Amino acid sequence: MSGFQPVGPSGPPVPLSAGWISARLQALLPTGWFNDDTPVLDALTLGMGALWAALIELIDTVRAQTRIATASGVFLDLAALDYCGTAVSRRAGESDPAFSARLRATVLAPRATRAALAQAIERVTGRSPQIFEPFNPTDCGGYSTNTLGYGVCGGYGSLALPYQLFVTAYRPDAVPASHAGGYNQGPGGYNAGPMAWVDPRDNPGLLTDSEIYAAIADALPVNAVAWTRLED
Image 1 (cartoon, rainbow, N blue to C red):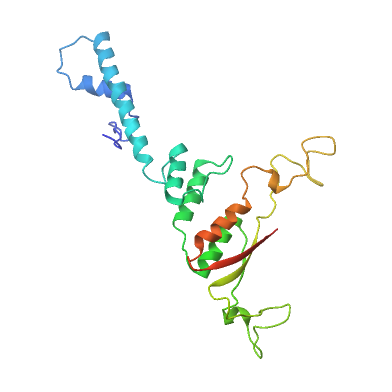
Image 2 (cartoon, one colour):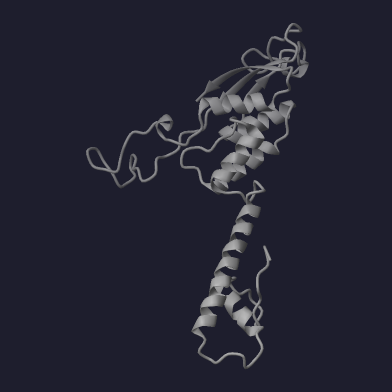
């Protein structure tokens, strides 16, 4: 009976409850066996209905925990541990829907290509990184071409650095603190709340540098090395 919903005569689903199951059981009994006032029968069928309703609810809950898209609570944390180890964990105050979406995006993300690396960094930071491969002529440019210019584009290449790249990743832009005022924006003022200087690092649940490094390592091929720096 798991997953089924009873439908009443008018069509819309009827909540599957102890009362509904009790009424259904009594409706199947032969007419004339009992009077209209049946407290003992009511108690018996309601007890059976309560057990069945609780069992069906439990089965539905267990079934939901078998998929990341429907898992919740600690079961979602266990799914993250199963699929990603300690690389993806719930942030402070992160809701189930937000954590589930982030976990599924990580599990299904492309990997082992330059485009996949850029997508992985942008997915966690919200900002596009700079990637330079000294072994890649397209990045380095060449004389008498329009892909090389001092301080404009291109860079020194090297055949001594195969499977290595230089990554500049940018931390997320600063976000306003909830309920905090600012310049020319109320409410709030000096010595009058709510107003405060806020640094993103002071807010729990925000992206950490270690999460950016982990996203880069997760997207790289096993034989590649990404020399990485983080900037604001």
